[in-house]
Image (cartoon, rainbow, N blue to C red; front, side):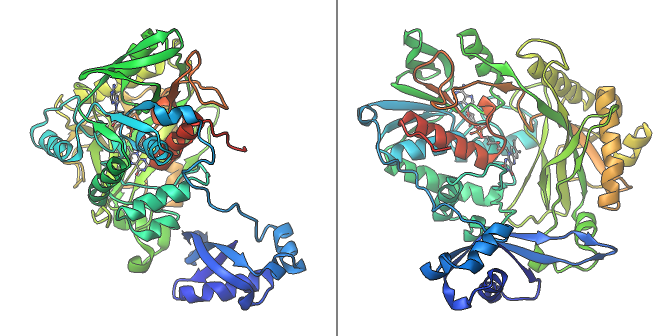
Length: 534
Ligand SMILES: Cc1cc2nc3c(=O)[nH]c(=O)nc-3n(C[C@H](O)[C@H](O)[C@H](O)COP(=O)(O)OP(=O)(O)OC[C@H]3O[C@@H](n4cnc5c(N)ncnc54)[C@H](O)[C@@H]3O)c2cc1C
């Protein structure tokens, strides 16, 4: 149930407030757990009446659990019953898996939590990733920023931890699944702040992720998982048409009894070659747009009002949506990073794609966010890979417009709105330089019109959003992938395969760290023969 506290009110009031809200006595609450905490920053008239909103799980006295007061609270929606927490372990594992080996492709969140689930249930796992282990990866990312030489196998997208390793480490997701709790607990056990278990805007930050990931790997190794970095999947060996008996990789063949495919959405080469080998892919809607940056102070003031207690509240974030009209497509903010840094999230030379990351303290003076337009399949031509080709075309155009060395095309928001080049820029968090480019002309006309409409609208919600200090860079082309590998609803197998489970963002079934992790774990459950009730 939801309970509100003023900014100055202590958490010890939660029990009394919860009891009051249901109409029971405080003593009838045997246990209280904070399931979620968020800041209500909505403006009421001209003022910002800031408060914390807590969702609490209560363990009630059995007599109260049958009381009229609780029945009334449940009926009115003030409270609801919840399932007890699930675990990674399944009650009955198909015994054949105890003698067999699964190869997981991809050490991103989907692959890691598929591995966690399988290893917890006693299955032998080899986990391969084309990129390197974290330490080597860190050196390559630093080298890329310094020299502008991109290593296509070792970068911000490929390697231990996957695409989320250099990120804001946001852990909130629209995917409501009981596995979220146990997944967050593994991160807490590996050193994450325990508040991630309930903070509605939980995030880890790139610096802490770099301490947590090696501990997670050590734990997985203790559970029997064998990691093979710098090992790229190149093809499938089949014993029969539907059964994969081994994977062809850059480090030789890996025999397997089952394959979990967690490639992420940037392995375009692998997806293309697997499609040639008969893996069915389909086009799906996706988003593409720009990244916008402001001083964090502008966002804090716009969301909280002047002089807010940032120590208590943390830096403000936002999530903005503009609906479609006959002339424009829907636009929304995506992956907003308070106190963050804009980065070139690229794996293919000659292409440029932006994204955002931050450290655990959100300490940079900039706020950045994707601002993306929804595009449906078929809009940019027919064919399964038409969306990928559209992404690649824009990424190449932005790379070249920036001068071909990862200097990012940039335009002030006010110039983007007026259709003119910017003559100078203030400071930005992007470390590889800004180039004055008419971004409004680089994007397709409808996309520019959609973004212009949305910027004007968002300026009403956050004063100054479309003003002097707003900066646009791009292209933000990987907020979601344009491909899906369809799969059976119940078994989660790829069509035509008896032992290949596509998971995570590359399969088109998730769009973030937590949703990918949950998807990987659920497919591991499906492999083990566990069927979920809904
Ligand atoms: C800069 C940035 C910031 C982000 N910030 C956030 C955030 O704050 N919160 C959030 O929820 N999401 C964020 N995301 C998105 C998030 O990282 C992804 O949604 C998530 O990582 C997807 O998980 P995945 O396991 O499906 O794929 P990935 O994490 O992409 O992992 C796929 C792995 O497969 C490997 N691979 C690919 N091809 C092959 C092959 N042929 N052989 C072997 N291995 C292969 C890759 O090396 C990679 O390690 C961010 C992404 C980026 C790029």
